[in-house]
Image (cartoon, rainbow, N blue to C red):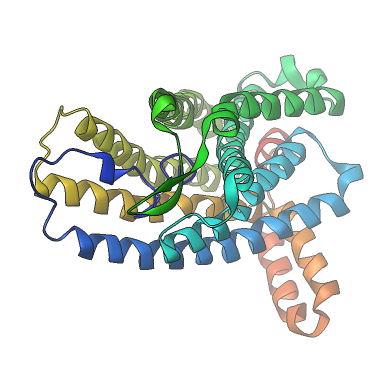
Length: 352
């Protein structure tokens, strides 16, 4: 994550500490300048899109909070997680643009920790929603009575506490460190570099491998169950499931692999020549661009595809912008009415 591998060149790994022998990579300046411009623009775009989409999700769910269930509560917290994540991006945008951390030690710890909490809580709530769908579709007769608002609140608190616990090293060990040649960077000091390995482990295992295994395992059982149901929209829901898994894997896996390659490079396990240096550095920058857009896609994948949520969102937009949204609302209602056939179990699980 940006908070974790933050430095003055591209926010992902202290490359200046890497030993490349008696020379520095000849074209590393070009990669550095590209990273600064690219990340500054990327962070700004993700902030705008993520804030707009997730903010609308929060507004809709707050307005209809009296009708909420476990799915709505998870959606609400998923949107909050993504908002917490995107709120840290303007700081990293500034850091990428000027080439150093300019907000002091306290903000370094706060932003880094908040960035991680938003990342992990978002992943964890997606896992909870996956498990909930699995239980309500495959074992609907067993779990219906346990899907209460009280149980949802307890589960929500546990997820946020787990996210805070996993992110604690950022609050404790990361510091604003002054470097003679690079200014100030927000990173782990030398005596705490071991926590970089911990962060890499948690990002790869808790942020990718385990969630992906849960999604694949649950949805591989859900899909055959759905296909055996007599519901007109089962194929649409199967496509939605495939989109959820593919979007998560394709957006996050390349970034996690790039961070792991950087770790192997620092440990001297893979070549430490100029070509590898620049390729890994550029790979982290580019794959991050794809990974960070996932928080912008979450409202689309998990909320706006659902007919009930879309209807509520359009009603809210109609009140906020009556002239602009009238035609959109009417046409969307017509499409929604055509697509609103399906079984109660399926709708309850995927209405989002």
